[in-house]
Image (cartoon, rainbow, N blue to C red; front, side, top):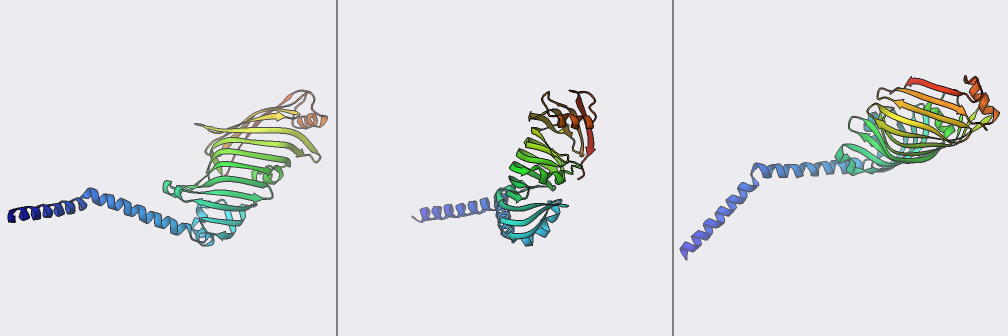
Length: 279
């Protein structure tokens, strides 16, 4: 009996030593350290998300440029800004609901709703590491007249409604470096100063190794439009193609094309517009 008790005691001692060696092994230390860091990161995320938006904004202001917010309410997690600006223009109000899990992939993302004089738009948007902005599933119905100042269309006063259906948009400053989706301009008009009805146009965006491309086509109306917009990552762009009047187009459309350089009835206006967007 004494011998059996000694063997049991030796077995228990060996088990404790083995367990202690296992817990103190380098592999186990790395395992515990990994989960400790995950716990600290989760706590930091929750702490950051519950900060009042007005307190957190100064720390995020640089990453959000060129956008600017004012009249902040709520928290980083869920809040609202009474004024969203794209200097020097005021877009409207914006509300957001944070997607905290996106922080684990290096993104600051949120469900966004922008509401202003131009209309209403919804998107999942935010910032990636490096300060690059992005939008996903951007949808909306906005006023062409209100959007025109944002696009710096000198001398043109477009009217009508613009439908947005953009599945992906990546930005480097103000320059789109990746775009997928479609934009439709319905009830298109240009004030000359008398409004001239132009019908409906669409632009389908895609991205390849050369940059962002958009095929612009007419859907209905007095014009035949066949154009391509090419935008490179350095901001340089070119619009090439042709615009012509349909046979039943009203005289005002033919006058518009003659004023742009078309010298014969039924002739086409070649497009070759180049420029560069600023960051």
